[in-house]
Image (spheres, rainbow, N blue to C red):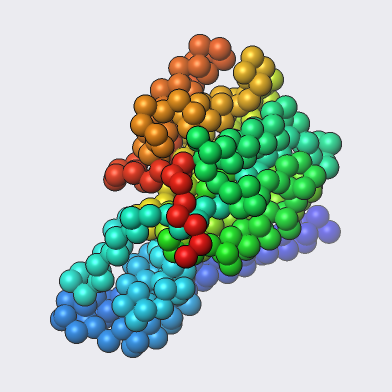
Length: 381
């Protein structure tokens, strides 16, 4: 009986290996076919007379055959933009960025980018801070909710933020459920217009994106109602959150992410779960980007912790973010000014008080970075 069971086990293993090999071969063939379609599209662009409607139809097949082919999404983005289909263009652009496309230009036929308006019509903010969780197995964060309240209050102060109070949505602790957060993002998608400015702020734990943790390589924002045993079901996938944020029509958007995925053993003051993982990586951060007026600033590098401070009663990142808005040399400061302040102050304070590294990151790291979140809005037109 033991020999028979062992033979059945070996036979099953062989069949699984053959099946996996067949799947890989099929996937490779599909991606090869997609590359052939993309080459056809490139030839049309090089001719100077691309048939954008036909290209979109061709690439629809390509996306089905090989959904990870970045160039297929890039050319779909360019053709959708040329046809004036902005909604599809944004969706295609997001997928292209997620699949490691850094250059979204498609040759001479690609439309020139439209300059940002010289004014801001209206301003909106979504501010999220979660320190207490329904699941008692999730370690509490002492200052996450306070960080959110402090930042939201600062945004409404005329000298620093100039956001109308009715346009600032604050979700903390039990109000920051998965449903409430996604509904708030959807509300911004509906309310915001292209000449508006939107700020998104998140302070919470994050989950790891490790394959061996059963999360499929996807990181998550831990919400109030997340069950730690069912993170993939109850939390919000960073990819999903980023893609939805990218769909907000405002051409000026800034996301501040004070979350941390890193570490194995939780220490007092660190914003991490007691599980292995990493912080927001470059690929995830790029998902938030949807044009030349969008930026995302994370609290630390992908392999670092983000820290809270008993002495200042905030996280270091949020404290110096507010400090940058209140005490800037130029008023209101640009996103680049804010990031330079964070880079200097957060890194020095955490090194001195925690003897740990913490280096905020900004995406894109190049470019003007001249969006000013404290600007006075023109108001409804």
